[in-house]
Image 1 (cartoon, chains in turn green, yellow):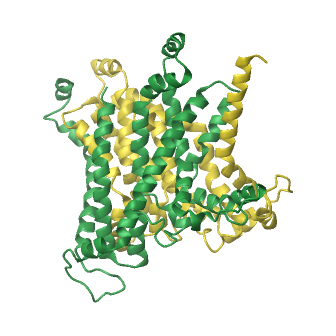
Image 2 (cartoon, helix red, strand yellow; image 1 turned 90 degrees about the horizontal axis):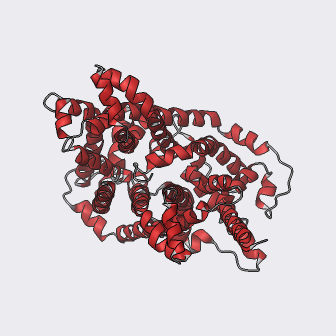
Image 3 (spheres, chains in turn cyan, red; image 1 turned 30 degrees about the vertical axis):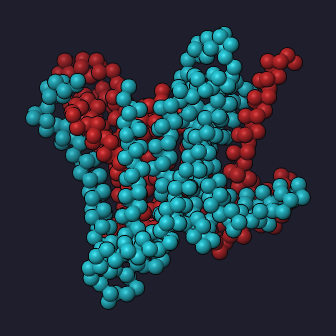
Length: 296
Length: 272
């Protein structure tokens, strides 16, 4: 491979090491110090409200955590949220990429409009959706429902998780579209033309030419979105605060509640360890997928 | 009209309708910011006398510019720092690859999968004990480390695509590594570095987990500014909309102008 060249430019492999050292060291510290502390705290009795109750707790925190129905509920919510948003954005993004690839009047402006939500900060989009769109009395959706004589839906109390999925999907659909639209532009027009000559309809062209061409781009979209979706926080923080009940509490929000609202550092840390393990299980699959796709 | 013009018209119409629906919440937010509070909660209407009252009142309640300035410092500061740390690293990975390069890159990306919430407690306590809580310095540190893996990846992708012959020619002419970086690498990769920086700025500007948990007042950026409008003020929609418009306007315009450059970096070069 490139090895001889590399060796020629270095003294005993020292140069690449020195150049990479700052980034690698910092990232390693950033990863290992908090991680070690989290694991340590998770084995302690450590509640800021009960300063006298300290000491080694062993696996007590984990015992509480795993017998707490909130944990399972929040894990399920995390997976549902990630899963649904991924399905909506990848399927929607692919279809929209095909649509916005067509020639039409004002295409440039329409594209800019459609990708805009990606640049909106999560706190803003959550607040705008919560009040201006989904408010049961004065929101746009309620107004539309009344226009058709229907009963307005009280989104956050009757369909809480669906509402969160809608908001998050609205933010990430433009991202998927942006990436897939770029990818679709490198599609070989001659190939499409040849297929058309052979009598292929638009649907078979989509499934047999466009979709395979987008495979790499789709895997990149899934990977990046997964990183961000596993830790959705602000959208829940400003809309439902995890409720009603635990209906919209994901793992990130559960740990936040335990740590900063209940001041139970030990319990929150145990939750943190569980979140890290869950993320790593997902990561193992993802890294494989990406590593495979990045090799030409 | 012949069938093909008709078809094109239908496609255009469909695309515009979808674009309008997706953009609508932003459009409506901007519009509501120019209404009075009464108009904001009454039946939706496009006809009203625009007023700047909400902007004035929001500004009275909390100084927008202080939050905006924090956002600017934190996002540009962390981006600059991340670039300085990442450029040498990405350079060596792209031009002096070893057996371990691929593994290092994947490991870096995997640190990004560590959910921030998993390490919230220790970071919070560390920051409390070192006095970094509610400071711009603290946020800059967190954002730098948060974006570092993505920045290294993107730069690596751009560096790797450079024609190696040019660098080789430079070396033949006796350029030192520093000269090579300054006179050959930098000019050639400036577009790549720029788009990496752009993405890092946008990610930092919109980051809401650490900023909500690690700041209270002094260093609070715009994400926290907006969150402060969440519950008690929930019914003052015109003010909320005015504040939201101000919070997203800079980065939205920034994003519009730079979206093309961003895409390639975002996909780690996997999408051409």
